[in-house]
Image (cartoon, rainbow, N blue to C red; front, side):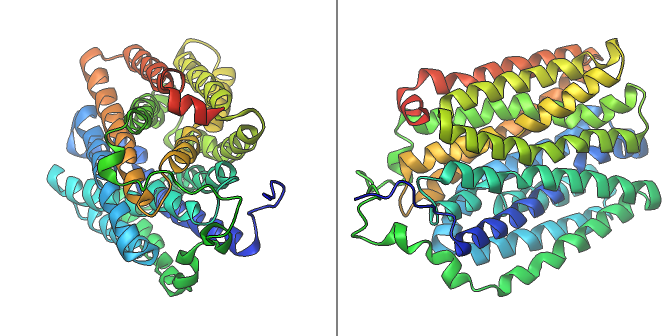
Length: 411
């Protein structure tokens, strides 16, 4: 008999959640402080907005493209190696960026090294790790892990802006690099037990675990519509979100806020990301992933409308509306996609398969941030940027409705 009321949140599994949360935080901390560099780099090097945004965009491409590689490394070498490489790559990349004087040097340090670290410490290994410890309660588990995105963004933005204000952007990058490298102590944890997963999920005679009907491999997964549907959710949603993310701090400055006020106000949305993700994970267990996903898209579109109205009315209401709505919905689709992916493709090759799906997210981040800068350079206005964002969000929601396998797993 199955035991539907038996919790999977046992002490060791909770410890794994904390570890994954910390790794996710490190990846976001290293990469998501970049919006604070848009103005300093534009001013110092006289680069157009699109050129500066391309550094972040290329980094997002690296994050996405290396997702399958990170998945393979996770399946072959284990989490200890993947997380260790990620922390080392982020720390070295940030420190070397402090000496950069040409655009290619930023591509090498921020885009390549820090972008790769975001993949090594991000959703692919964390989702693969969670799938070894959780099954029926994986939506909530992934919501907890992915909420590290908000914590990392808030800490990274706030701390980097404080460093920039006091020491300049070069010294700030150097200090941030040292902060990340301090996390290398995690390589001394008992990784053999951590990587083994829950005995309840790996025990052959357990009757409450559904064995996969297909031994999924990447070659089999890419021939299915759900694989591409989930990748497209990542891609278009990433476009919609990061076309706003890359512009938010600079937009707030142009709306009348000081640089530190702009960074802190935008960073405040990060405080709500854990609330939104945990809330979405809990609600998904109650009403299903489909309804939860639709609600999250409505909230995100409302956030874009709020920030769009910021320079047209009193600052307080649109600003707080943006902070609340953007924070509550930022990244909330990630745990949903991870949950559906683990249900459709779970097995010993899940890390590799999910890495392939996550490529869509990397390209979405990249194209969203790049086209956002390009659209602004061509139009000189944020109206087209926010319109682009809303259109992408609507398209991103479509696979939840149109693809039967995704829709069935969402209910």
